[in-house]
Image (cartoon, rainbow, N blue to C red; front, side, top):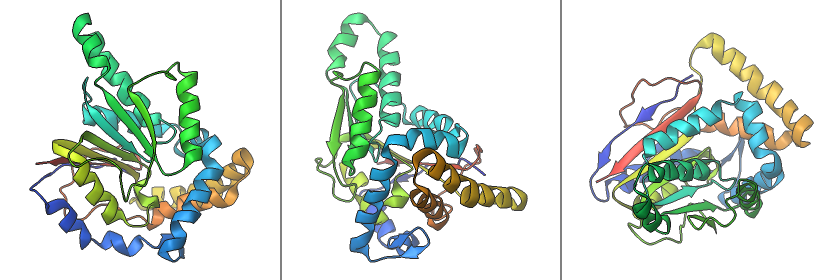
Length: 277
């Protein structure tokens, strides 16, 4: 079980071209272990996340024993947020990653001079983009509970990762956590991420990876297919949605091929970092 960090710089137009021929596309029409038509997948995934939205963060804690919090902390640390940045967090409806980025930016500003801090307050823009309105509603509610309901730096946007409504080269950073395996066309998501990033902008993808050690793999498989769906039924009253979530992890490739892997290890998360030239 490993947290893998891959880094590489790309020349103009290279990233989309590489992924247009990627084997990831063969998984684009899977819904868990089922094969479905492309036009069906988006609706089916939408139903899953509408069902799990209310208990999504609680179930993440139960499913990962709280480790998803450490993975997201590491993702934000690799992003290196800064005051005045324009950042896009995709499939981030509950705000978990966006809140961390904002806290990091505010921490940097607290260390800066007060007059500069005030001038940068309005410039920082963190867009939380999600295709599912129920997930966005949960995020807005959580923001209110944290006293961030009037925070101008947080901007909630309903949008499709495969067809973003943002201008070319408009973002300093792009993150997507536990979301890319649920889209229909992964190569379109990556091409859109590349399009909206500025030169030097950072793309970070956090996703669950496969367990390789045989003993741990058996334990992980038992936990995934027996324990997690049962917890989903007990906590959220929805066994089928959590059955899909664990199946979707198995269908997702264990690593993106063609990229150098570094040996950072933290259980079953995989963090990929790309920097656009």
